[in-house]
Length: 218
Image (cartoon, rainbow, N blue to C red):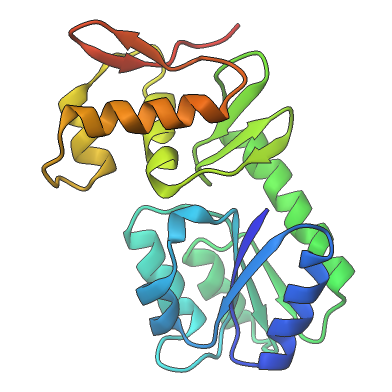
């Protein structure tokens, strides 16, 4: 699991990072919202933990910018605030839960696990016997274990999984994966070849002279 943390307290950052990394999870953290938005590859994370009161851009502003990019990864707010207006504002922006300071790290872990379980059940597309893809987090799972993917690989699987059983042309794939930058067909073929090398099942189908697709799995 990959966690993106926005928190201006270095001690809290280290506590969360050390706790989750002991369980083989990755935690990347930033102290202000601008730095997070400028430097983090947002599509690479399974969940966001956002403190509300951070410099430059607070947690509310940061999540608003993330949602503008149509990134629907689950988010949990971390806050010392108990004002109901803060809670309502957070849910209006699309957060999944609140954790109030001080909190137990075990409680935070349980909340994350529950949110990811619910999110996977709601947004999961079964694409082979052993794999399912989460459209919300852009996460690929092999027998419930997260598969490590690059940003381009996630975008490739997202567009194919979202349009299950439909052929997506080479041009559409290139425009989506590389943000309308001009790339050669060979670049796409190389990307797909590298992704297939990571997989136990070959569910990305090449439709000759048409494009690629993933067929639904029954």
